[in-house]
Image (cartoon, rainbow over all chains, first blue to last red; front, side, top):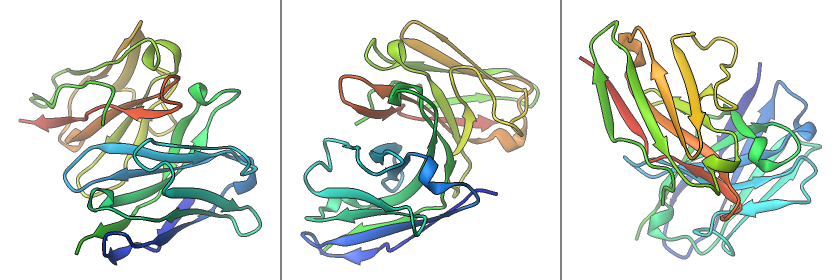
Amino acid sequence: EVELLESGGGLLQPGGSLRLSCAASGFTFSGYAMAWVRQAPGKGLEWVSCIVNGGGITYYADSVKGRFTVSRDNSKNTLYLQMNSLRAEDTAIYYCAKLRGAVTWSNYYFDYWGQGTMVTVSS
Amino acid sequence: QSVLTQPPSASGTPGQRVTISCSGSSSNIGSSILHWYQQLPGTAPKLLIYSDNQRPSGVPDRFSGSKSGTSASLAISGLQSEDEADYYCAAWDDSLNGYVFGTGTKVTVL
C-alpha cells in the first residue's frame, strides 16, 4: 500500500526557513516523479514543485521560484522541500504527491497524496 | 492563482446527476490530459479521474469525465450523501511549465 508521510511543518516568522520531508513507502520510490502541492486555509489547491525520479530535473511555481528547492534522497525514500524567505502567503497545508504517467509532464497526474503538514508564517 | 475555471458550487438531491465544468486554454486542457480530484472535508485530495476519462481502481462508475477542446466536465450520476466534497480539475500548462488546478467546486447533497 502506498504511503506518503509529510513532516516538518510548524509556526515561524516571515523571512524564516523550513525544510519539509515526505517519507514514502509501498512503492519503488526511485522509479517515480514526485510533487508538492499546497492549500492555503479555506482556499483551493496550488501546485508548488515537481521533481523527476532521478532528481535531476525540477520545476517550480512562479510564486516560490528562487525561494523553494525540491530534492529527494532515493536511498532514504524521502522527498524534501527546502523553503527560504518565507512569507505570510506561504501559510498552507503542504501535500506530498506521487506522480504517475509517461513521456512528458502533460501526461502525468497525482495518483497518491499524503495527509499534509501545516506551515504557518506569522509574526 | 488558478488558471482553470470551475463553478464555485453545485448541488443536487440523492440520486440526481450533477455536472461540474472546467474551462481552460490551449496551453493546458487543450494540450494535456485532464485529471480530477475529490477532497472530502478535512482530508487530503484523492484521485478521481485521470487521462480525461479513466477511473482508478476503487472509484465508483457513478463518476465519469469527458473533455472537448479546452473544456472538460465531471459528472456524478446517482448522487449520494458521501459525494459531498470539493472537486478540482488539473492539467499541465505548457506556457507556465507547471501544473494548474481549477478553482474548485463544492458539491452539496440536498
